[in-house]
Amino acid sequence: MDLPALRYLLLAHDFGLRFELLVILLVICFLVFWLTQNIFPSFLFGEDSQYAGYIYNAMGVVFSLVFAFVTVLAWQNYNGVSDAIAKEAGALNNVYRVLSAFPPEVERNGQAKLKTYVNTVIEEEWPLLSKDQFSVKAYKQLLEIEHLAIQIKPQNMGESNAHQQLLSLTLQATELRRSRIYNAHFSLAPPAWIGLISSLMVFLVFSCLFQMKSKRIHVLLIFFLSSTVVGILYFLVLFIHPFLGPMAIGPEPFINLLKLSWIY
Image 1 (tube, helix red, strand yellow):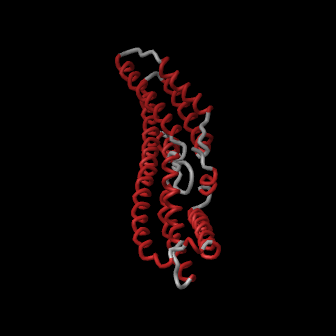
Image 2: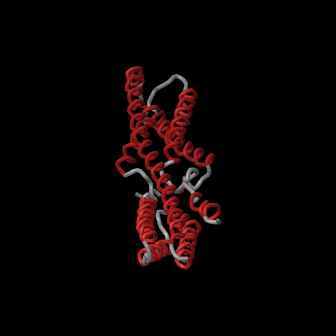
Image 3: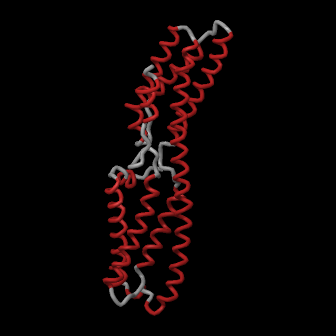
């Protein structure tokens, strides 16, 4: 599910994202507040505010449960993608090391292809992940590595054992890459978004329907409520897309392969 508005918000920096969320909620709340207080005063609770307050407290609990459930979904997906990326880099590093069990020409060719592939992932594919896309060039380079591993003909028992390990690691790296590509999107399905947004809007709109003696105090309370909701909503938005926003997962595990693990 693509969400252009949310994608645009996630392009902002840490403070900018929180500010934009606050402005959006305040505009909605104050618009509803002005309409109900001045145009549709018959919708206000008036003398029934005490009983409405009981319902409002219950709504707060329901909203908290919905938000907690949705946040756990997004957070688990984010952590799962992060772990898979670290394992993918680890699998590629193991492939690089196992290649040393074969003749020098095979080792040099395989390691050169691995470096080229990792460099393409860092420079070309990673920026595409934030757009829910992947690099065809990187995919073709990975296929070349797989083909090289398959075509190796072991000459002795040691190379035969290393070849089995190499094939296993190559397939593991391919599966982990596939997982990374498939998870390059917003982690919540449409039903989860509908449940969260509808609960949030009902909760905030309900707070505008109370009739208070001082409108200034009412506006101030709505402001603080919206600020609190933005604080918890901001936490969810940070993890909503693993490759987009202030908490976007970077290619550091792959960069470390080129700068640390593979320079010796």
